[in-house]
Length: 56
Image (tube, rainbow, N blue to C red; front, top):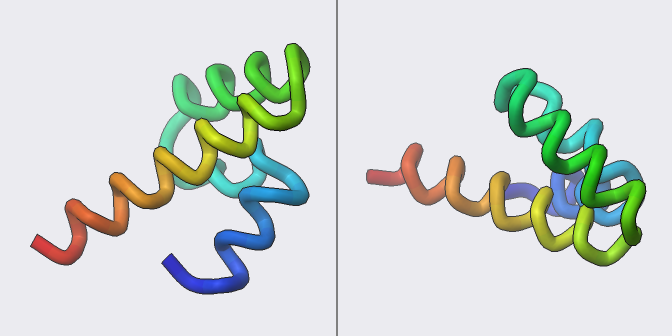
């Protein structure tokens, strides 16, 4: 995951998971609405897991 993607995860969590599918966008959006920090954590986790799958 690049530094730009990490910054987007912190500033706009739903935008960071835009390419992961509709379900992930909804989950991150709901978590962001309940609290900014849960949305950031979910976006970072999803992006890091995707990066881990790409490296394998």
